[in-house]
Image 1 (cartoon, one colour):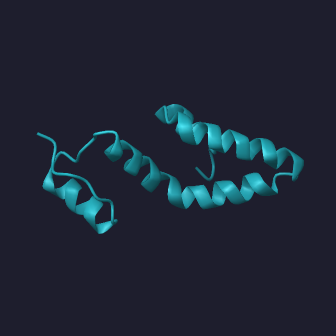
Image 2: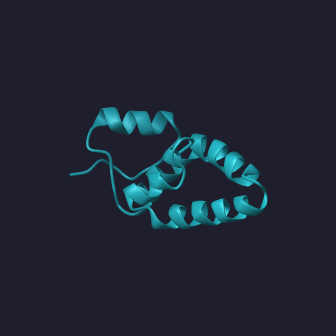
Amino acid sequence: MFFFGFWVPLFRGDWKWLIIMLLLDLIGIWTFGIVTGVADLIMSFLYNKLYIQDLISGGFKPNDEASANILKQKNIYFNGLAE
């Protein structure tokens, strides 16, 4: 996210965050890139967790116990494993 900005959600097909990032980039035009730089910095730390939570809320589940344990360690909650 930090280096590629809105391209990450575009390639993942994550339309909600793509629109949000594009709007922040448009605002960044009038602030000489300050908003864009701050948004990219913050989103580089948050985006993957937000994306995984959106996938889980959409019905995705981890395939095995190792994946489930990693998600639990990161405080990402889900209902069971994929069957």
